[in-house]
Amino acid sequence: MLRRFRRMRFLHHEIASVHAAALILGAAGLASRILGVVRDRMLAGYFGAGRTLDIYNAAFNIPDFMATLFLLGSAGAAILPVFQEYALRDKKKAGELIATLAALFFVGSVTAAGAAFWGAPRIMRIIVPGFSPADQAVTVALTRVMLLSPILLGLSGIFSVVVQSSKRFFIYAIAPLLYNLGIMFGIIVLVPSWGIMGVGVGVVIGAALHMGLQVGSSAWLGFGWDFFGTLIHLRRRVALLGGDIAEVVLVAGPRVLAVSLAQLTLLALDAIGSTLAPGSVAVLGFAQNLYFVPVGIFGVSYATAIFPRLAAAASAQKGEEFFRELVGGVRSILFWTAPVSALCIVLRAHIVRLALGAGAFSWDNTRLVAAVLAALAIAMIAGAAQTLLIRAFYALGNTWIPLAVNATASILSVALAFLFMRALAASTPSGHWLAIVFRISDMAHPEVVGLGLGFAAGLLLDVVVLYAMLMRYARRSLGGGHTTVGIDGIKIIGAAVVAGVVAYLVRASFSDALPLSTLLRVLGEGATAASAGLGVYFLILAMAGSEDVALLRRAVGRRLFSLRILPLYWDGDETK
Image (cartoon, rainbow, N blue to C red; front, side, top):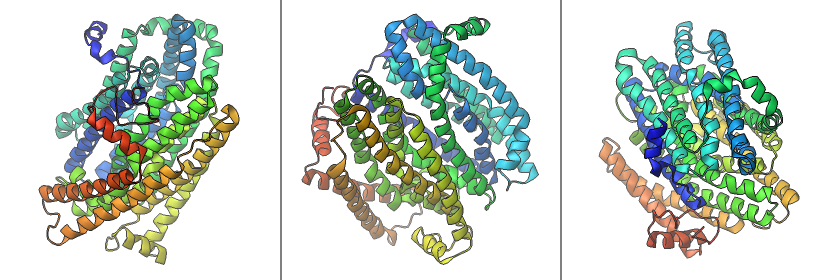
């Protein structure tokens, strides 16, 4: 396997430019998200938004939650600064640290997975109380199959630290593609014979491909993993590296708890959804997957690319450089995400119909998923910026502030989701008003939209508080910090609102003449309205003297896809 990796040298090309890294991560993220949408379309076509997909989404709860609780597997961002520090001093010691962490993780994760395998029936009665005993039994069986995936993905997360630290972002970026391809293999090949269980097997196949790529690339970089040797001498290695491992645990612990809170929030929303009409959990899951497409492309890509620079600036106590990278990253995320958020609200039905409208996925399913997507899109900018803000705290060595903020926001999200859900279910005046706003007042079970609203409200609070506290903490720790998003942010938000209005007017002009009865009409109407909105958005910002548009125009003129000059900006230096 290692020989094959050596033959594929182009995969291991070092990407030193943060702009090039962001482009590669963004492009691969886009490809992965597109595959994810295709995957969901296939699932929707096979099963519709009904109880079968409720079971599939619910079965992911325990594996996903375990992936966050497996300390080292989900703490790559916390391990990275420690690994970089040791790699600069002693590459061999850095390799031993990664290998030991992987071995400890493997032992702990297998033990935890075994406990979850045994306790799954009892756990399922708590997290999906609205399911019948028969549905819970199927959910338990599917969960037990997918318990292998967090072990594999956790190991992949550990070795991805080596890949990121070595700036091999191409390898890091394409691993999720393999994960989705594995799931799609399960849907195409296994579902006809095995039903929904075939999707679970596909998840495990995808996780194995994800891990294999990262582990193989790490070995190519000189950080191979002697699996059995490490396990045999694990006690001795832990004794030698005890201080280093303890440092990683201390840094990573609060991060894992913070991510676990986010997962607990989604789990709580699924639990509430299981008590609603059949298909509600699936509706929420589909909407969340569509919402995370732009969030992943813009938010996660920028956060991943800029995190090593933030960590380096913080370590060197370069306050001005830290704030320049941070504020520029937030502005770039805002620049790309704001118009997408507006268009998702205006063209929600077109997006859902294009992404999922096939086979057993009905028009009522489309309307409900579209309404939940619109609710989530309200907080899309916040969702994209959240990862960068949290990682900025980690770069500063503080993991407790984001933990406290996330805990408060998670509690608020669940409480508000329950209140919104009850308001819509009981047809209260506020619930009736919400149903009219989201155009679902004629539907028998609109209450699932309340879950999306609760999630969005908690996320908005989370990011507003995180940003305020981060700026204050960073100024106190590093000094400087006079750069803010400020006027640029107001211009971007204002232009996005106008773009949304223009897209709505264009869409409305088609509504009577061209009903959404065919795929081509949906695509044509949506593309025309989106193009009009985006055109107005860029025109307004260009007239307002936006630096982002000016840099974008120059970058397009100098080969848009060059790895040296990219339309992804923090400052005016295009050669960075």
